[in-house]
Length: 252
Ligand SMILES: [Zn+2]
Image 1: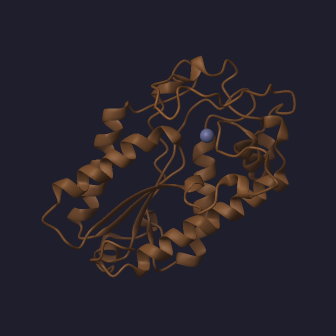
Image 2 (image 1 turned 90 degrees about the vertical axis):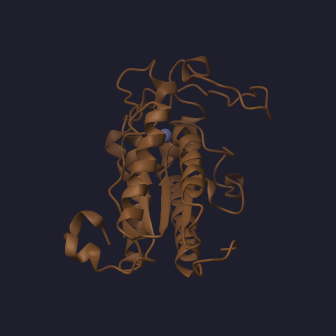
């Protein structure tokens, strides 16, 4: 069910072990061929596909479209909550729901820049509420939840999520083709090897001039449908685990 549709007495009457899901996304540049709302559109579509199966078992918050996109600020149209602001925002949202009695919080993410502050938020929440033994704080990114790598899907050339890439372009082609510009002539932009396995601080401008990373020209709506189906399965499996968690154990 959607939080936005409920009255406050209806929220007050919910069982407090029901998982609360906050979808997180972004509004940021996605190259010359995809709209700035791409991450929010894609996260919204995955949630839409998942939601029916959890109609009365999960409480979905509205999608948080403002993400941490500081690394894209050199490109016009990008809006960003700076990392520490975003961290505070996620902490505050989670505290609201703890205050209302809920115990199982899931940040479901659809934007790479939210990854570090999102993981930090669930870490901080657990430390702050260390006296509790009945809470679950999770953060997960929808394209990283599967057991196999993306390459397990032989239909796609890309082995990982890029940016406005084969994957994202395929999914937007599937759900809103009228929003896709000329992706066939977009140049390939390699992922590179930026001192891996060390983690390098980066800004998007130093990795790509057009704004995308990956191979948009390989996109098709059929690949988009396969990706959506896979991510819908992965997210659904995670939510089933959260629902069936016994409320105490480390293993879930
Ligand atoms: Zn994206």
